[in-house]
Length: 188
Length: 279
Image (cartoon, rainbow over all chains, first blue to last red; front, side):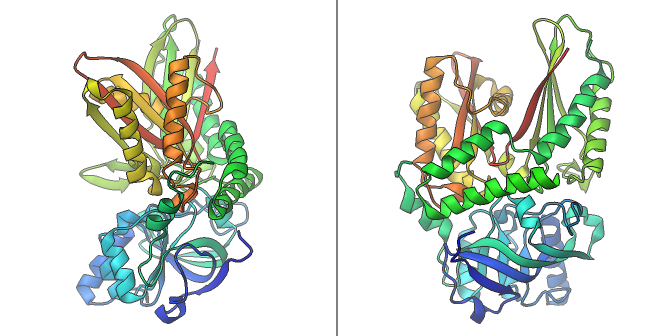
């Protein structure tokens, strides 16, 4: 990771996230909650039923990931980001309900980009395919709900300098839109 | 004679190996790319991928948490008897390999009506075809969901030609690369029929990217596609750069006079496959 990576403690408020700029390298420390497709469906159903996010997720960071079992003396064997766009359908309402940051990989919908700008939430991208490395930055992992979903259960994880990049910042700037345009037609 | 149990044992060992070890040709290409990548962010991503490969091999943990669906393709020598009970034997081998090696179970029972996890990463997606001679060639691929989702089939008009194919490949990469974990291996199938062209693209991913095609036309076309994909600017992890793909592999086949089927199947930076000859 670049020496100039910015340290970010999670969970973070929109005010604390507001200085981050899309494209910056970051090291994330603190608490996140894993949630994939099936988990999102259940969180959204709870939100609809009760009017609020379950399990104290207000102000939390969601990590789009489903780990492999514990191994090599670590809380999880391997864990890395899954494709974020599959969560796009639920994301605007979850941001409105209090989620302040997300970690995944890949481009998001225009609705998600706008929702980041409106709520001050930030979308971080971790590098897909680096799950063995990323697992060395996960201090603990504990299933909070829905264990029957297997790898898709809601888990609480504690990060220690987990490497990522700011993909969509709180102004709605999107690295997946501007970075490829900067490098288009440039040859190695 | 390669019986079901022999093939199953090969599959079980292959799954354990490829889940934690980056393919040698991919590792070499990634090491070379870190010297040619122009974007600093791109180089940082490539360095993370190289560090990841070293940690996975050292600690014997999966390269990627998505340890995929398992595709097994057995090319059986025509002089052999068809192995009895092959599906059951490879299913049992894969269930055992996933359980014993701490790999992730990522298969649901039915795509439409029952999306509950099968719990043992079976069934194996199994193909058996015939080839000349004796013995069997066993190909094993673990395919992640993110990269397999980033795939497409297009039925072009024959007049579209090489330009049309190149445009289709570039369109697929630009639309879908960001979720497919670049730098990619791009598998391209051309020809066959609607149903078989996707398999051609998947077979293309098996060919090592440091192995030049014997056919000079194919070699030139693959080089042209690689240049076009890398000029997209998508870069490592789709965060911008000059290394969007490490290789492009094309397999072509006969087809109908009216047809030009094209399939693109993206392989991720942790492209996992192994080919084993069984005597």
